[in-house]
Amino acid sequence: MKVFGIVASRRRLGNSEILVKEALLRAKEMGAEVEAIRLTDYE
Image 1 (cartoon, rainbow, N blue to C red):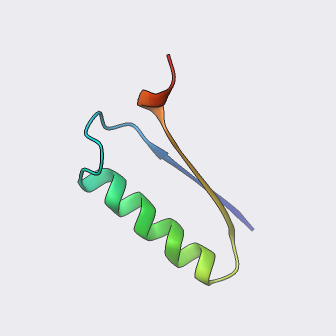
Image 2 (image 1 turned 90 degrees about the vertical axis):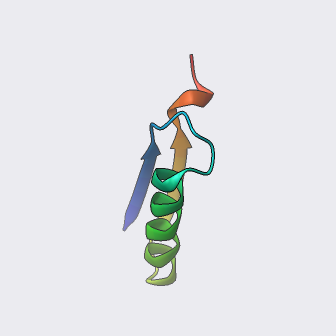
């Protein structure tokens, strides 16, 4: 299984990013392949 997280908040390490990272960590522990991006890193 693949899980893709998208963080759209402008605040670095804000609540949204923390929650996405935590969810991806749990998914990875269960054997999923995970990836995350921050939309503010793109134009």
